[in-house]
Length: 401
Image (cartoon, rainbow, N blue to C red; front, side, top):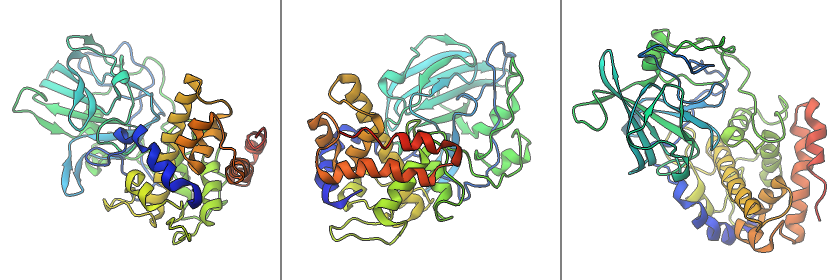
């Protein structure tokens, strides 16, 4: 983030996304060892399911567990956070009736589903959808596995994810209480109509208790971090300092258009992977956030609850989250006809010279610094990309007008 261009434009554009930038409550947090994480149960089919059975509320392979049930930051997290790209389908975890659907304090928007199960009334709660991501209505009767919403980042959220709760005795009826969703899912998981795929590596388990109850599809750890799912390819092993590698990989999963090699190239360009970097203009840390920008966009990813621009986990996850926010702005600009050009080039322009300036110019900012930035980052990304994907990444570097 080049200090000469970002301070004012980014603050000016913050109003476009401020509603999704709060970091209280149900925001994502990353387990301490992202390179060695057991697996959540996976479901590959949805119908038919046995009465009383449960379905994991996001599609197989689409999510990682970013914050478990239990004590958190001096409070108590009453659900489990499943980080997934914005727009990922949210599935009803069980058959039931929709008793709430729409705005809710802290959640932005939520859906509450009541089910009469063999052990009594159970509510499942789905939070942080944007208003257009609420696809169910009060009174609807839904089946386990039916899509009822889309993942968003509304309300008190640090990035796109599903906050999922399970309440024994009901959420809205008084007298109910939250329970850990992971053992609950594992105790009554639906039998898929097709054989499930092999469990995905790199996904966090919600609690040690879940492991003891054999809820998980796998209990082992894989030394290889989760593969990149965003943008232009996989990070080449050993191409970045080891303390950065798992965080770059994880940051790139925050939206599908983002790639780990691009994030690595940005860190190289901004600071040379120097976590203590300070620019003459006041930019801080490895991602070179200006203080005003950090105050709006910085998140705590290392678990201590305090966003620190010099913390590698905090800086890299904030870098990825902010990039995804800009990608969302650029995609909307392209859809509205306000922007023209390549998506990656446009969001890099917004990162470098500000979203407001990029929108005002209708494309990549036409100053020498931004034009160079937008060319250089994709070209540099080739050095951080797995060999079989170099060609695709290099192709992104061309075509700047």
